[in-house]
Length: 220
Image (cartoon, rainbow, N blue to C red; front, side, top):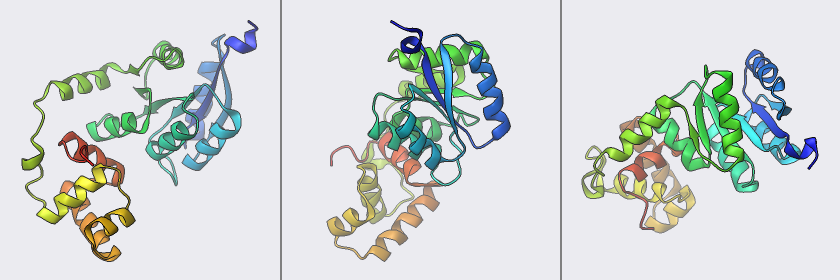
């Protein structure tokens, strides 16, 4: 096997040029890792992954335009063999679980030592899941909690809002919800806006995570 065959090809997706440059410098000194491209937006990460077919994408969550969670989902959907390793400042439960549900194989926090980062890159290429110590503790704590009952989750929501959240958790689009519940598109949008506000979630991916953690969206 040639050296080229054993080299791990990496695409760095982060909106900060200085951080990308520092990451490239750190990775380029590893004999088995080569940075083949950089992306400053979610769209560029998706197109770069398609064109370059790297082995690993190092993905930040906060990206201009399409965020890192949605970019991860699209990359994995189009090229399941590409391993996405999230590298971000965020370690809250919603972001961690949204990334995992989107298909990320690992989740490290910025500030991870070079050795930890290289170990993570090599691990996801080998098919392993890799999480930083703090993130791993969150996952363990989450799965150690008693599962909430779906019928008592989110008491702040109305019956209709819970019904719509259930469909959101099942991955239904607004148009599918409109058809399913025989509601107008505007009414569905208003309900979803109320749901996001009451649950204090930023977007649909976070709402899906909250819904599924509560046992919603699984039966449809």
